[in-house]
Length: 220
Length: 107
Image (tube, rainbow over all chains, first blue to last red; front, side, top):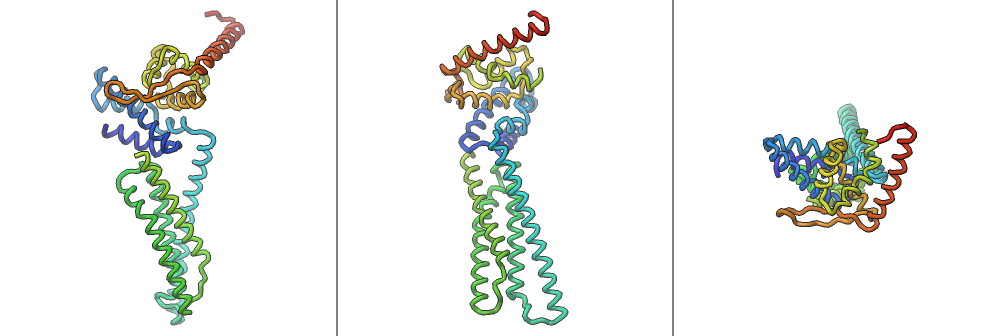
């Protein structure tokens, strides 16, 4: 099957609040049902496109079908997932704003006082850059997760998302190494518990994303 | 027909349809629509969760079967399902009789 039916099943896959094995069975049944419904439409004299549209319409909207599978537990999980996504977005925006404003301030201080301690790669600059990158990673993760929820594990989003966990882990390792080196050379103070916490959050998010990808892959 | 009212009696309706013999989801939904002469017309996709719930309760059993070159999930009543259907039918008869008596209408 191609076209609207495949799109419908992809959207349903992304919306179902069920476990992967259960999702797989639900989709198989839905596909068989739609196929049967299309055959009935064709027998009644509809065109292929009309039969597909009628089959989808009779089956019900993705939202209605997904809601019919919701239980109290899955409803609560959906709310928590939404909160986690929103928190990621807000944290990402905060880190990005914090980074940009701090870097602007540092540049201003350097220009107005000719302060040589604030070099292009000094400790504070690196820390604020790290915060900005962590913010970008969180925002990227947020948008990928949103895309998954809308379209399921398809195409570019799935490929791009696979690079997110190693990217976040590499960034975390590089950031930690830079902090250690700066401390050893006495070039800067370690003032980044907030930044380290944000990096840890980015890695945690990446790991969670990996689990999601595996779960989606199991139902593909 | 009010959908909420229909959903409240969906278990009885599905068990009744399947009392005629094992059937796959599409056939169950088609029978429900045809036997009600179109009155029971829920979104078809919302019937499957009810079938799965009845299966999880032990009232139905299902298995994949090959028919016309396709794999289909076929549902059948269990002994517990047969007993539940009898109980639901008795309860419904009492309810319908009570309603008929109160509203003063006889079928």
